[in-house]
Structures are given as C-alpha cells and as structure tokens.
Image 1 (cartoon, helix red, strand yellow):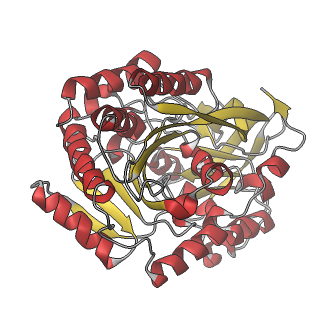
Image 2 (tube, rainbow, N blue to C red):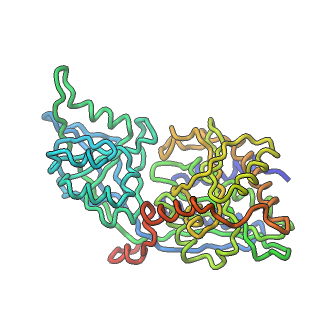
Image 3 (tube, rainbow, N blue to C red):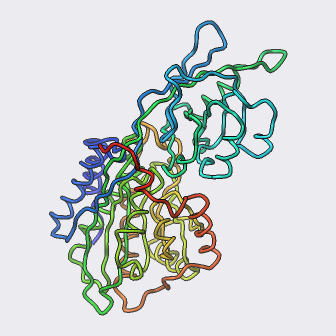
Length: 446
C-alpha cells in the first residue's frame, strides 16, 4: 500500500489554508490539534491529547525607527523577539553599533554603553555566556538578524523561553537585507557616520495551554511493548501559514496513520504530533521528561519536519550508531529515493529531547525552503505534495523494516561522541533541566 497524494493534499490544505498560522497556544493551534485527533479517531485508533501549560509571550507594540533626520523613518519589517523585556512606553534611543555575531572582541569595543547593538544571529542568544556579556555592555537595546535567511520579507524572530529568563535587554528582529540597509544609513561618500535608532517593544508574558496529540497502532508480537515513535509538530510561527514548517510533516504523519491502521506489526507504532516546537520543542521536551512512561522501550524516533520544499533535496539527519546510518541508507537505496544522509546532533527539532534520553533518531527534512522560512511565503503554493508523498512512502518502508522483524536492524544506542555532544547541548544551548512551573510563576493564565 502506498501513500495517497489526495489524502496528503487534503491534510495540507486543512492545516495551512483552512486554519493557517498556528501559533503556539493559540486557538488555531488547538483547532489543528483537534483536527488531527479526530482524524486518528475516524481511523479507529486509540488516541488522545496530552495537555500542558507553557510560558507564552503575547506581543503588543514593536517599533524600530531610524531617527537621524528631522522625520523618523520606521522600519516596517521589524518584529518583536519573543519573551523580550519591555522598553519604556516612549521607547529607547541610541546610536547604532554593529556587533557582528557577538564575539568577545566585538563586545569589548569601547563606548557601547547607551547604544543600540545590531547582532547577526538571533539563535546566538542560546549561549548564557553571550547573554551575560551583552548585559554587561550597557547597551540600551538589541536588533537581531536571523541571517540563515537573506531576504527582506518580515520574519518572525523566535526565542526559547528559558533563554530569556536571565536576559534584560529589549530585542527586535529584522530581515538580513533590511539590516544591510540600516548599516548603510551612516555611510557618506567620504566617511562612515552615525546611525541613530529608536526601539519600542512591549508585550505580556502569560501562561498558555498547548497539547501533544498521539495515536497508537499496537504491536501483536513478542516485542509488542517496544515502540517505534513517529513525530511531527503542529504549530507554526506568527504570520506564516507553515505549509512546509510543518504542515508537511503533520500531513505525512496523518497519512501514515491511515496506511498503518490495520498493519500486523511485531512492535507498537506511536504517532505524536507535538505543540510548541517553534519555542525550542517545549511540547517534545515535556513529553520526554514528564509524559512518556516507557521511554526505555522506544527504539527509534523518526521525526518529520519540513519535508515539502518545492525545490530542494531530501536530507536525513541521524543521531545514533553506524548501524542506524547503514539501515537508513539501505532503505532509501531500496526505494531508489535519493537523499543526503548526515550524522549530526541538532537541537532545533523535536527529536532532540528524545536524544537526551539516549533514543536514536532519524530526522527527515528537505533543503531548499530557506527563502520562505518562517514567513508568509511558507504557503501551500510553495510546497511539493510529490516530495511529501515520496518521503511518506519511504518512512512507511522504514516502519515496516523496524516494527516487523523479531530483532531490530540496529541497536537502541547512541554513539559515545554523539551522546557527549547531546549532553553538552542539552546543558549549554537547550538549558536542560529547566523548570516550566518556575518560569510561569506570577504569569496570568489565558
């Protein structure tokens, strides 16, 4: 049995067109979760939702202006960074200083106090050491650039809630080419002059609710308690329909549920669609650290995230052992499915909290979508249903090859070097362990 492009396109349309932007904690995210659960129920699968609360941020005001001349010029593409501290109501004003990526040398340059810094790489704020150094500079505010994407289209600038608990600088984000324009403001024919900026950003930190949606196809053999875990995420960022990121992966999971619902498998297949992935996998983190009761029985996590870029290359990122790499390579080759395989630890998708438990992972991804990443351009017109179909069928084959035989084709182990990298990333970049209740203390519930 093969995947149906009609079914995949139906799910894509429901998620990215009928519902659209599915911001974490929003009614749209809840509607999408209920739609996925109803789909599982119609297939006759045991299913449900794990609900959880998380620290949320509701932006209210975001204004970035160049105030060199008599009339301020507003940068309309500026967006608030989630969880940023508020400026005073009237904002803050200061001369622009370029910090590159925030190296120690850049932050030791004289005269930073009272200025507004421009920093390449919003994800650099994952580093506690960088956050501390920035706080000591005396800067008034920060303008950050997600320079993975080099365009002018407004982009939602994300942050993990735990990164911002100890950070007191107001932050707004701009697209890369807009940052270029800002830096060019101070240039004259003869010398480099000053550019003066005004930043205003306000928002509310609240306790919101999200959910992880699950379904199971129970195993029927001696290894029925073993679990093959297939995951995706439901949420998208503000202002983006999230067709590729990640209606594509969730549509594939929904279709895999249909294809597997009557399969006679030796091991249990569990499907989980997570909430709040776009805040550094909060839903997956809570699943791994609190909700799952049989983590030792999970043999592998197959994560489907952003698999539908219309002009891209299928890529599989692996965390495990050489035996896992060999298994995945054989499966793709058997299906004549060209894909690049990369052994790499990555914190920016939902498999990482499972990796923290020592669970090997296979992350199916597709390059070529960066030009639309986290913007309004991530819409259904820019997604390939055929690419999603192909990956869905290959994952279906992987599931049969892991859930059917009496013995797993690879061990539930992590390469020691990879495990060391995972532990270091969990501590230094992810902020593990972090107490969600503590971070929500004093927040109003919504």
